[in-house]
Image (cartoon, rainbow, N blue to C red):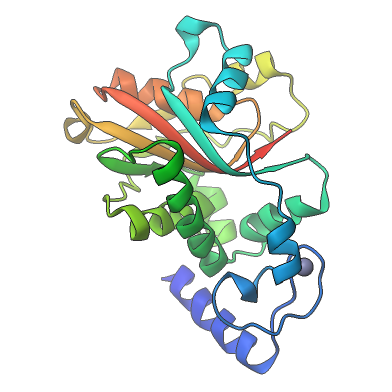
Length: 236
Ligand SMILES: [Zn+2]
């Protein structure tokens, strides 16, 4: 509900004053589509992510073979951690731009089709803790998943994964610390739905992959047969 109100407020705001580009802050001329959030120049300069196969090999460097629960991963973009492009992610997280996340999800949906060739039986957004959700008004990964679903047609199972504890920020942690930071954090509600299914996990950012892998472990333990992942941005 809050997300819908926000979308309405954004639409109204963009009518009276066009939104600024999230990356370069220039006032936009577009009030519709992704152009209302990212100007055409910034959009065409966004660094495209490496192919899925290379992203998967990068993950293998962080996880021993038998600890990697993900079968494949794809990303739309690849940004450096403190680059101006990362403002796009901060916009989704902290300014609550539901509509922008949804439109970026549609873009990601097309990447999923070409890079993975399948989007599984259902889309599962990486959950944020309820307290953080209240703070932000929405879960940006859920909005991304709904955008993907608009392209691929799968159902979005937003309530399947639960985050049991609010984990502290991971930005200053090493890969090993990140793994233990999120181990056992995710629980699966109503695992019956999962049995024998392939699911596509959705998140905004991939760094070492520890959060996605912890989610994938929980899903496999609950009966999923395969877990794929799609992220908007691979940060490095
Ligand atoms: Zn711009």
